[in-house]
Amino acid sequence: MIKDIVKDEELLSKPAEPATPEDANVAQDLLDTMAANEDCAGLAANQIGSTKAIIAFLGAHGPQVMYNPKIVATMVPYKVSEGCLSLDRETVVQRFQLIRVQFDALVDGKFESRTRKLTGWVAEVVQHGVDHCAGKLV
Image 1: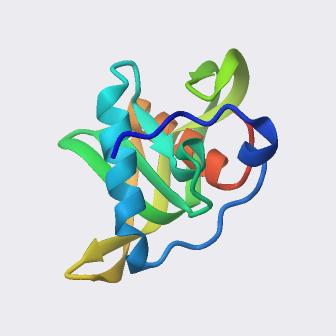
Image 2: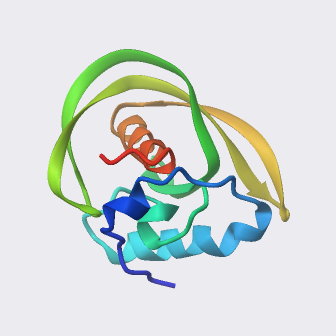
């Protein structure tokens, strides 16, 4: 279901709760909402009103979802000015060209732990989403 984008900074500033396999509907809402916003490369669940640690983003092979994402390694820092559907301003942030992210993937109704290396634009979008899960406004 397509959801409205949350712009309430107080709500966006709250750290997310761990997601469970029962939160698959939130992941689908993220994908639907992302598809309905043509300028959207990624969304975190708090941007559509959920308190769960879930992100969706456009990866190399189309839309992808990560439950409970955590960045566990970073390399090659740089500064960038990012926009956000939830904020009416751009923010200068430090990002990393290469990251390793650990997350849960929903497989046959249960979580499987995964780790993935990401680079470039996709790494930047995932870092933005993980920041949202931590309650960081970007």
